[in-house]
Amino acid sequence: MTSKTLLEKAKASPPPSPVRPSGEYDSIALPEPSPEPLNAIGLGDALNKRRSVREFGEEPLRLRDLSTLLTVARPTRPETHHDIPTTGNVFKTSPSGGARHPTEVYVYARNVEGLDRGIYHYDGFRHGLTPLDGKIDDDELIALAGDQHWTGNAGALLIYTSVIERNQWKYPASRTYRVLLMDVGHLSQTVYLLATALGLNVTFTAALRDELVEDLLGCDPANELVLGMSVLGTRP
Image 1 (cartoon, one colour):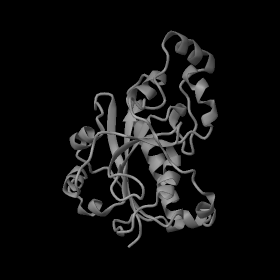
Image 2 (cartoon, one colour):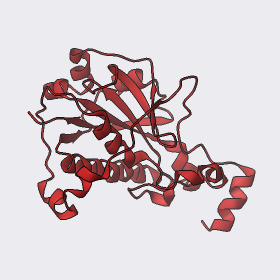
Image 3 (tube, rainbow, N blue to C red):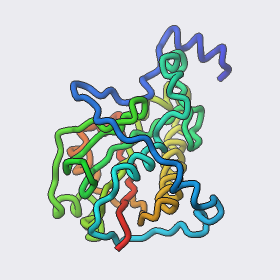
């Protein structure tokens, strides 16, 4: 679809919002990420050291480290977001088919300094966390993650959903569902590399009980699919 065709389509049928609205809640501002930890390790080292690790320490996850990890879902040119409704395109550090970026990121803070335990939605334009109505204990957390007991020791979970209409607006074909999965794969690999550079343990899992996750997030599975999550924490 050419740029001219997209603009014509946008005039007749505006694209969906590139971010989930924050609703009635105010966003909790996150500290700006510090470049020093990331620059201390090269890309080649991060790729070679990247591992899926399912053991986490009792020390809380630092808020600044969580802020750094969430930059994967932050637009790289946020100052242009007022123009985004024209075609709905955003640009981030990971690739996305047609620049649609259908993936939404939620944070379940279990052991994060300065954050109350509970579920938050990440607002990439404001680089903040919007608290949602959801809090579970460790047993419920483990059940949500398909009875994977190691998740009960994590510092935080980054839960990924996919908003179908963002891609379907530009690509109204069944093949678009494949791209949703690729998008989460790109994003989670970037999280792996950032976590490695920050000295954190991380793994990805798609073995979730979708209904429990949907209840926690308050999302409608007909429009927003639960696809997986990165499980993060400090090293033992």
